[in-house]
Image (cartoon, rainbow, N blue to C red; front, top):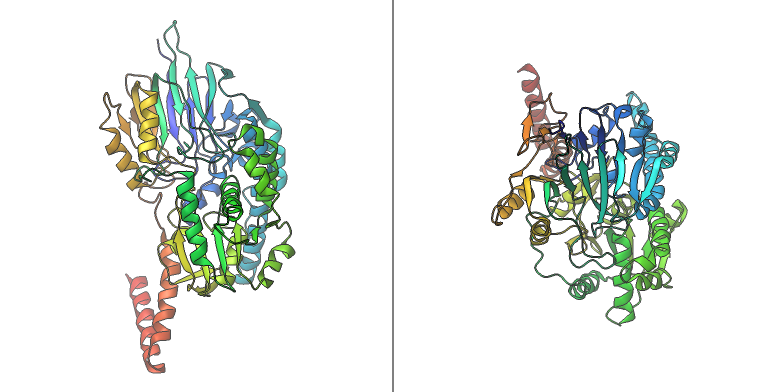
Length: 533
């Protein structure tokens, strides 16, 4: 007889962030990932809401990797009453020990800024989701697990971690849930984030065969990068840097501080060493990237090309900036230089200050090297905005916008399909998660071509599925925290900011004071009409 088994999708459903899945029997509840929502303000507001489950009722947490969209709400979970073990690989434990406190610090700093603005406007103050101290306390519950070894994680649940090839310590997590009466256990595989074929520092992803269910990431489910190699990527990076070189200019690279920054650094130093690029100062303007680089250095012997990374980190052309004063001093450089700064989607951190300083200047280039979620400043710039608002100020965009999407830590559609093919048979179903609608639907369509293709489902946020029978059955659920149509899309905050910029443009473009007055009167009349309706 099978035990009752349910799977809840509390994040990364019809959107790329907030990874959080709950596996539940009548006796035990195990969480896989507890990530922060990023993207539009509508999605980010979910981080401030109460968890849709009782934190103290969770038996264990299994973490796929340390990226904040997979681990970023762990301190909130602990603060809310979760006191069980957090199972993660040694690499993930090391990275989480710097990334979670950094996340707490950023939240405290941003909330302090917001509260100053709110006080001036007569609005209520708010509290951070958690503090740096909360994050440090949560680290005590982490327990390292080795790849490839079964571990009992909770009554009736055991887990085995497989290298996902995405990031130092990243894993796909295989979970077996025991059945009663000697029947075969239910076998599930949570892919985590799957790395592409040509990662500089990570191995090819691995995993088991013969499963009941797979929960598969789909970030690039609609993309085919067409035979990318490290050599081709370096040539394209070289061409982008050469095109950006202006005697008094800058190349700004918004980049995730962990792994993406280190890969870029190795490629830039290799190109300089080979004479493909002149010697250029490269500023890594991220305290987190400095700490992460030290961890990568410690793990270098377990990384592909680890010796190249150590050499790049020690180059005389690489400068790590720790303090705010050091970061500000970069503004005084008047020759061409490269700045790599977090966050990768331009949503926080020092990159926003550099964008504010440079976006209005045509001698600047911004190079995007990773996924930009809908509603983020990075995506708005990538989509060609002529003006943006940063720290409350309106900035004209004159800088060149470029994208080099060959540094992604995610597999593309052919690689995801190949990875799943190696996992077959998958008897009872595949859930596609961690993607926006076009990527999810394209991957679903592509997987239908597989021989003995499993049922492929696209859950929405807060969906619950009964996994007890021969196939997954969606259970009626309470009102979701966010309609599926809102996930992974621009929201009203984006539209409002864009409208303010359009109003300013229209008023500025009006020929005279009378014309400007007509525009303002029409907007007021429209607003009055809306309130009367």
